[in-house]
Image (cartoon, rainbow, N blue to C red; front, side, top):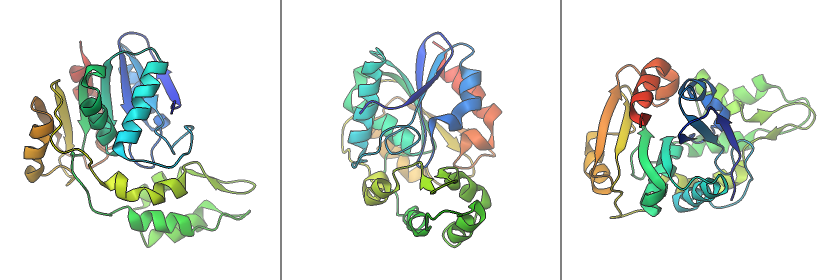
Length: 252
């Protein structure tokens, strides 16, 4: 699958991959600053943003989409930055085709299977009746039982298009069907020999000390940096800190 892209800047290319229910344009500010010296290409992963909707969201499948899109863009190799689901997709691409990934930057996710945290949220999103006249406040109220944080609900509802007959920008049915694969990690002993930086949120529990052995098994050259006052959405919680880390990490 060829994915939708948003490109900014000139210079050496680097890819940006968003997390679950995100989209390329979420990276606009970060992308604009990195684009001062780089060609920064943000991708909409399948079933997100303006990319096609289709079944199958295993990390092997989503990594193949990224590699196919790189080929379409005439990018034989480049660094990949990924957050959360996008970070797992970036890791999968590096394990499947290490020659295509010159370096890897993974934001607050580990190569492990996670619990079904988002299953209740996805089910709540599916309960929203997409009828004319639906308001964002009504949709927010339905999500509130599954997700108490207003900021997270606002982020999720950025995917809801109102006016006329409301519709989801995301391929919600495909995402719901493939949540087991999105939570999973399908690799065992494959290793990527290139440089890897894990950017962790100091207030996040996504990457734990017990994950380190598995990280180093797949990525023996892994280094770690912690953004002290950030949670899982590290680039939103401390954009200046993350930008400084990414500028240093992508400097060629």
